[in-house]
Image (tube, rainbow, N blue to C red; front, side, top):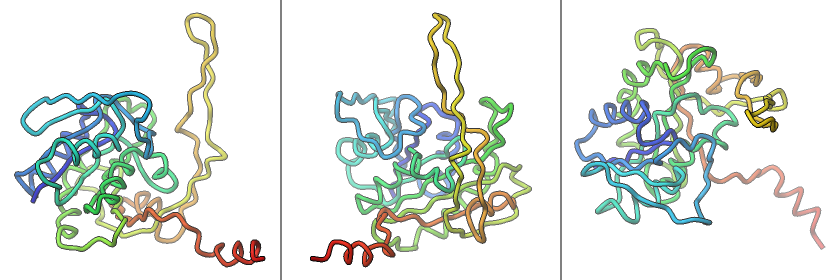
Length: 254
């Protein structure tokens, strides 16, 4: 089984090394193509206004000067000798739950694989943001990653879908299990924009990731993580709101 690994935290991110350990429990045919630098929040963006550069670090390890979507595209069209059987994106440093999936480069890289007809899974390690810095504990992801992925290997994915996995911010031994859950909801109206002044006296603005309220409904990824479980959520690319189709059809009917 050929597996392609990618992420949005960059080729040297600790979470990518964790993902390598996870993938090594599933196959010895592992390829890596990731952004050369962090691309968190890049979403499903594609580089169109400048050339993308590729660098080879080892026999099956590459980086590109672009987005997670660029990385998957380059891997499929220029690097791999044949399409992979599975694409794994992560392990992201931080949660990708609720509405966050629309911003996430991690999830978008998996979406790109799904668009190509390849089974794809996004994996993220949730952590408590206050005072963490770079010291994120990936032990839950490392211990539970293969356990979560193995049951998926023989499961046929519906077309244009992916699986989104989040690991709770607890030690590996404290994880309570796995819960299949629907996507939750964040209240971004309560998010923050932090204002500061640079050394030259000019103002700058930094989007804050703290202070965002969320409403954990029944059986959501937010609720699963809060309870100490690994959340497994199927996502689809089709964003059509079916309930509005008839209403809009009537609105524009001649």
